[in-house]
Image (cartoon, rainbow, N blue to C red):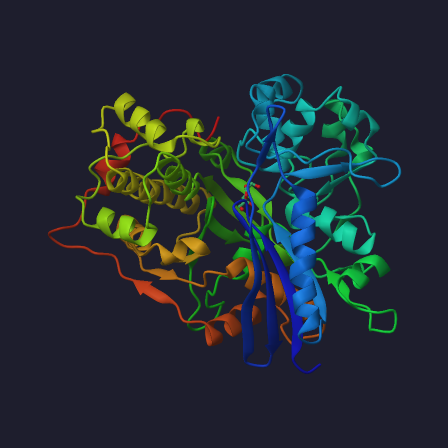
Length: 503
Ligand code: LFR
């Protein structure tokens, strides 16, 4: 085909974006059409997503795109794990819960009494995170909603269902549920059955690149399209945002200038790891608590969830709520001028998972670890950024060791690429160059997979990434060494080993 014009819906926990892209030989233009705030809504003591509101905003963005030119395809990605339940009439049963809701507190321990953690890891290959779908479903055992559920749909699949009427579970996101066998690539129905979960609600799996369907007449009409307009395909992309972001890592593929790369997808969460051909399900990988999530084209995302810029954004909310106006670039500039590694904390501590007063929690962690307590916003910001860099160092080195796959460069993608202090510290901490960009890697990965499905000549990840490199500027951070190099080893030792991530 000639140039393709497609819509990429990229939903993050703090904002949703509808983007338009034009893809053709040597061409990959992306523009934001619609951005809307997201975030949990507390009601009746629980934390939910406003999924109908998200659907409305998605339609609004798509309508703008449809009104301004051809629309050859639509792809949707979002954060993982969270889901809606449909009843036997295909109607949504209640609001989807946020994974930051506390209903899973103590649930993993109950689950492990039936299926031990070692066995869960051997089958599903996931880092222990208390909010993984299997624990959410276990928390919902005995509820009216789960008892009347006919179908479980992960959020991008739910939105795709409302657009097309088609039901399915895209594989990259299915792999985050804790009910997906990392080796066979099928639902782990036996595990669900042992846990007393209604395994029949798990829908058929689909691959990134499959066509989900075309817009239903009512959604087409909501986009301003009439019955005589060409049907618009909705394409399954790497519907887990992190899977799309990894597609959007502009690494040089195998060959002369091929890179041995690690990546950090830096947004609300930081996802730090490696792209592999096969899962690593060894005892060492389990002890290091690494995730093996499914990537696009059969790759494996061997990575770790790090608490990420969530801690900083929640801190900003806290300060603003208390009447201090925060200008983030100015705050980070001030933080950059402060002494490095004065206070480091375990940024993966479970206390930082729920929304709330992060500066107070950071101070509490510092006090418990015998570190100086950060007081001013700049000191707190510095502690967060330094502690993230220490965590990246520890986890990427553990990834390389347990997967036996060294790396020479770290690609940072996502919104966090704009945090130059963090990118530089990451290079310093790991002693390798950091290549920062693109900021919109998830939307670009979404677009590239769609474009291929619609006929673009992008046969594999290498070709997609070559197009990314040809069309996007990257910023390079060299590691600083020499007399003023920081003692990262000592900083890592100072971080209380504590509990593993978010247990
Ligand atoms: C990032 C992300 C992570 C997932 C977390 C919760 O946006 O998708 O990969 O672990 O959100 O769903």
